[in-house]
Image 1 (cartoon, rainbow over the protein chains, first blue to last red):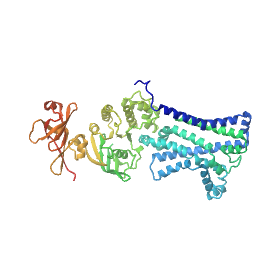
Image 2 (tube, one colour; image 1 turned 60 degrees about the vertical axis):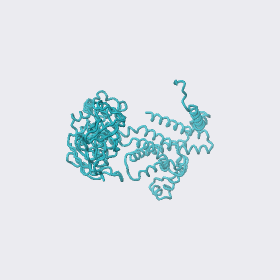
Image 3 (spheres, each protein chain N blue to C red; image 1 turned 120 degrees about the vertical axis):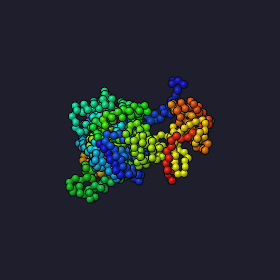
Image 4 (cartoon, rainbow over the protein chains, first blue to last red; image 1 turned 45 degrees about the horizontal axis):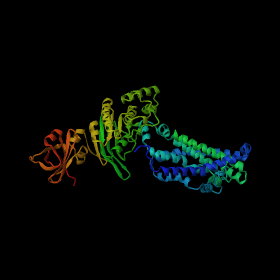
Length: 270
Length: 325
């Protein structure tokens, strides 16, 4: 049989599957994103800029950036340590710890927000203690940071655990036999081999941190201009029928998300 | 450096991986830890390296107890089964790693790396990445890397297992030559009896986490102390012997003829396989045993055995063991 005469088996079905996937992608992802951009831009550049000049919106953007930065830094460090301990050592309670890391993915963010409110609210001893020492957590910015950390907890750790458990301990053992300290083995051997997964996890964590709504909505108390993040502010603006402003902020979040998605692809291909 | 293991034992949970391991490895020798997979040989190597800890027993390197010395301070070179080359580093960076982490000056490291690459016959490969090398080349890079900091002990975990047969043969000869030159005390873990016999000064044979026998390759081959040791070094036929005796005969240790002779066992040839200079015969004896015998090609020309031929055989040499009751 000649190569030109053969037909790949199942090609017809493959084409149908690709077509269906493409259609779903357009309907559920591309169309809504395009709609956001269209709604934000259709009244021209003036109202668009006015949104960024608004003090409440500025405060929301600033709070989102700070909360995401702290959450990402925390979870990047935590993810590295957790993945390292879980994949390179054996200890009792390991399976439980692994399951615990995944918990924020399965718990509804609203439930997470409520749980944090109960733990850090002014009526709880812990919350009262913090408030007494001048760092109120519930209905304040620290609460937003904690909620963001909680929801984005698993992203870096999960990405690294999957890769590092495949890698095993061989490379680290080789480095240690060659005289490296644990830190040298980590910095010179382990980290370079997980760098792109780490970057990818950090970017995903950041995207998720900036977009968090439910958990933050519960614990922040939604004080405008003070504890509202961009996501909460979009909801406020929309409820106030400030459609252009709402879509401008939504478009900004979407643009950041798209940029992060492509950055992740780049990181994966390096 | 000499290595002494005394009463070493190790369990993985409820599984006994090693029991009562007593071995002395003289300095400058090459010793093989030999046994089937799961016999504990790799665990023992990892304990000597310091990657695993023994539950009991002592490990002395050159007289001093190293039980509490971490792996990085034991002065060992370790070559893992799949080489564990650092994939993001060049060959030169891999080989120089041990010197780098010790803070050796760059020029000095470069000089030593060049020296080592020449030693493993990979001059000019310094700038390559491990994935650009063949299996045999990676193996040699791993050895060069392990030798860089001048270890007093070289530990090799199945170093040739992942290689093609002819590359393996070539590297074995090369490793033996390297050992003659460097005289680093070397422990080689292998499941391949031929490899152990070809390379090692002494062999430590392990079964189920225990030492079965220790000796030179010819001692183990000529005077196996158990049926397991007998079978591990080549094929062996188990013949019906006198009461409570297991009698083993190696295939080439039969006298074979086409006529009956004193004490011969009559049988019928079932299968003939020409293996080059020797010919293997499967013989079904009249008393109901299946025996594998090997004769030389010269003898095969004389006897012309074919399936169905009448044949007579008698062991020239047999190994008897008290049968396990």
